Length: 272
Image (tube, rainbow, N blue to C red; front, side, top):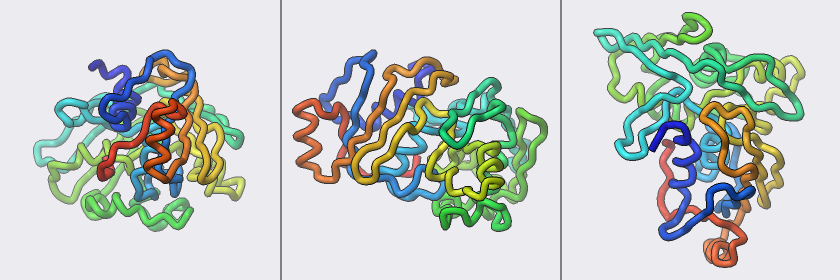
């Protein structure tokens, strides 16, 4: 598999049940989700349905995972280097990546190091202006120990970010492919803070992913539209709809009548 469609392909493969089929090129794809998302910010979410509805369609991370080997591969970071002592990690960031826009915000610049710092420091620094927004507790960031592992993070220049660790950690790179490591827009965060509506960052997300949020009706439906500037290339289907269907028998019935083309597998979710 080429890395050009990795994000969307992984989403579809993660959701497709055995034996299901979907014709590439269709204008609309419907997924019967089992629950409403608790948030559209995967930094503060803790449930599988929330991760699928947010990080896996709206955002990207510094790395993603090879679908066969399950090892980190480039995403928003194109390469990385680690010092001999294992405590300094330098990431080179992808250039030309566009953020989506919404009714509250239109970006004026591409993704850069400021967005990485914003996304990391919101979770790491209790004094960060966004740390307490939406009552975030950043469960996964703390569970993997990044709050204790990271000594500092700094912007070297617009397309290089450097982490200093308190000790070497073999899982550090893979952590940046997990849902909670999704990269948010610092420019959007600053704009909403100035307007006094910082919660919009979590409720009306702006990301670099294959889709943008178009409409959300709680406990009913989420509508997404393809990102026309997606850095991995053209998204195969223009419209993505999450039909929120808690009952498993109803989901199966909708699948059989083609009201939805994808239902979740009966499995436990991980935060990756």
